[in-house]
Amino acid sequence: STSSSSTTLLLRPRRPFGGGVAVPVPPVCLPSLPCQGSEPRGAVLHPAGRWCWGFSEHESGERRAVAAAEGGRRRRGADVERNLCRGEATTREGREKRSGGTRRKRKRKEGREAAVQVMDGFRPSGKAGKVLGDMEPPVQRESRLFANVKTDGVYTVTSEEQARLERLCADLLEQCPDPAKAYLFKGVHQGYLVRGLAGLPGGYSSLDASRPWILFWILHSLELMGFFRRKLPKGDAKRVYEFLDRCQSETGGFGGGPQQRSHLAPTYAAIMSVVILGDENGYKIINRQKMYDFLMSVKVKKGPLRGGFAVTIGGEVDTRGTYTSLAVASILNIITPELVEGVAEFIQRNQTYEGGIGAEPGNEAHGGYTYCGLAALRIIGRTDALDLNALLRWTTQRQMSLEGGFQGRTNKLVDSCYSWWVGGIFPLLQPLVLPHPLEDEKEGTESQSSEGVALFDTGKLQEYILLCCQMDNGGLRDKPGKRSDYYHTCYALSGLSMAQHQMHREQSGESKLKEAVGGSHNLLMKTDPTYNATPESVKKAIDFFKKFPLPEAKEQKQS
Image: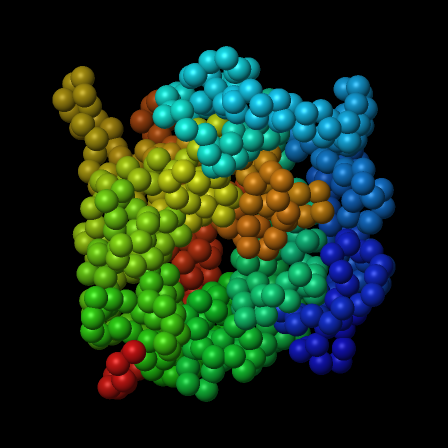
C-alpha cells in the first residue's frame, strides 16, 4: 500500500502477494505501475486490486505451476521447482519421494557420507578426485570447455565449494539436455521487477544509500526485455524524475537517497536511469555545471593515485570511481582536458601481472574493475595504455569449464553478475585485439575477416543464465543455492544480451548473429558495451546534451 506522498511506502515482507504486517521501508520511487484500462494481456491480479505483469501468452497452460508460485498458493516447504526446459514443471519433494527418500532422509544420508569422508582422510572429489583416483569420478558433461587438469592435492574450502557447485550446476544443466528448449520466463521476471518499483522487501532497508542503483537495476532489466517499447506512463516517469531530483546535491552529483552526500556510484546510476527513460523532462533535472564542479572536486591531482577519482570527497580512489565519472561526463558533454588528465596512467598502473585490472595499484585483478578500466579508456580513446594481449588472456580464462558462466577473480566461484562485468569486456576488447583480417595459416592469404570471431563460448554462458539462474518467483540469482535479487537480475540479463548479440562467422565466411539459445523468444534488446543501456537510449541522451556548451573550468581544491 502507498501513502499520498511518493516518498513513503508501506511494504509487505518477502512473501509473494502474501499477507503479513506492513513494514515501512524507503521506496525506490514509484508507488505502483497501474494498468491503463482493462486487464492487460498476460497480467495477474494483485490482491490489492492492481494488475501486475506476470505471464505472456507464451507462458500459459503448462506453466500453471509457476502461476501458483506467483499467486502465493505454493505450499510452504514443498519448494516448487520449475524445470527450465519449455513446458515442464515438477517439485523437488515429489522427485525425492519417487527416488525412495524424503529431503530429510537425504540430508541425513549426506551427513553420514560427509563424516565418513572426513574419517577416511577427506577423500577428494570433483576434478581433483578424477586425477588422484580412489573415489567416484566427477559428473561428466560433454560441454565442459576445458580438459581436467592436475591439482597440487591440497583440499581447501574453495576447492570443495567448487566441486559442490559443479555438481549442482551439472544437475540443472542435465535436466534440459537440449539447450534449444531453454526458456527465459520474461513475464515472471517483469512481474518481479515491477513489484520492486512499487515497493521493496524489508531486507532492502540496508540499501537505503543505494536507491538510485536499485532503480537502475530494475529499469535496465525491464528495458532489456522490451518493457519500454511503449513509454512509461507520464505520471510514473514524473515520479522517477522527482525522486532523482531530491537525490541531487546542491553541490553537484547525486547521493544514494534524498539529502545524502554526493557519491559517484549513485550519480552514475541516476544518470543512466534518466538515459533509459529517454525523456527530455528527465534530462533537464541534471545540473551540468554543478556536476562538473563535483567531478573536479573528487579528482586526484597529486600523489601515487594521481589521475584517479575518489568516489566521494574524502572517499576511496579506485577504478570504479574513474569509470563512473567519465561515463557521466561523456554523456553530459562535460569532458574537458583537465578532467581526463592522468586517467590513462592511473588505470595503466592498476593493471596487474595477471593481465586484469585491480581497484588501485597493487590490488588483485577483478572482473568489475577490469571492465571499468577498459571502458573508461575507451571513452577517452586511450586503450593503448594497457597490455591488451595480457588482458585478453586473463579475461578468457575467467569462463568456467563446466558451468559456462564467469568468475570474477582467479580461483573464485561462478557468479551471474560477471556475465556482464567480465562478458562485457569482450565487445570492448575484440576490435582492439583483432583489428585486421586474419591470415589463413595454410594458404598464407588474408581470406578471413576478424569480424565475427567470438572470443568466448557464448552458447554456454546463455545456458548457465537460463538453466541455472532463473527463479520461480521471478528474478535471477548469483548461482544455484542463492536467492534472486535486482542486482544479479540486471547484470545476468545484461550478460545474456551481450552473448546473444555477439557476431559469429559461418563456414561460408559470412558474419551474422547466431540464434539465441532457446529461440527468438529469449532474445533481449541489445545493450551498449560502454554504458550498459540500449544504444538508442545512449545516442538520444548524447545528442541532447551535445547542444549545450562545455562547462566553465574552475580551480578546485585538491581532493
